[in-house]
Amino acid sequence: MSDMEAILETGAAAGLEYAASRLAERGTPAAECANCGAPLVGPYCAMCGQEPDIHRRTVASLAHDLISDIASFDSRILRTAKALLFKPGDLPLAFHELSLIHI
Picture 1 (cartoon, helix red, strand yellow):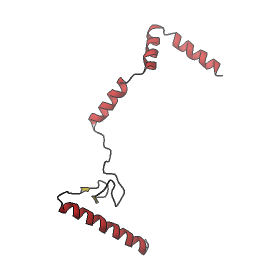
Picture 2 (cartoon, one colour; picture 1 turned 90 degrees about the horizontal axis):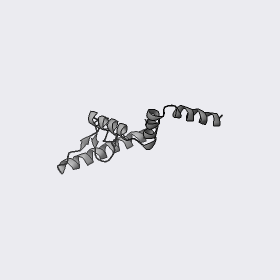
Picture 3 (spheres, one colour; picture 1 turned 45 degrees about the horizontal axis):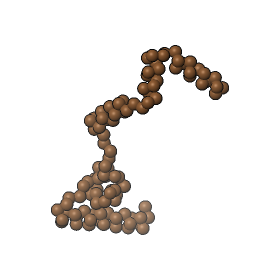
Picture 4 (cartoon, rainbow, N blue to C red; picture 1 turned 180 degrees about the vertical axis):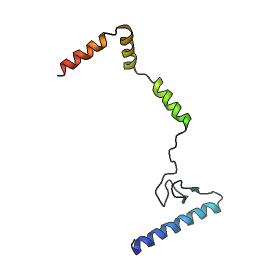
């Protein structure tokens, strides 16, 4: 690391500590970065660049996504299910005819 890089890094750390201390004086505690433990003053960590939201998913949100994905039928799925239930031979025949056209 060059001398200039060391000076810039030290200056950035000092500025971050100053901003965090000013927030603490106002009674607003600075959040802590989940990645490196530095105080978070803005939308990203000034030391490592990590976002404060680490996008952890809960079991409830995963279950909600699963149910919404299963329940969100579009018309093609319903038409295919209807064709498979009531005219099971038409669907493979239509697929075979389409595959012959594209050869």
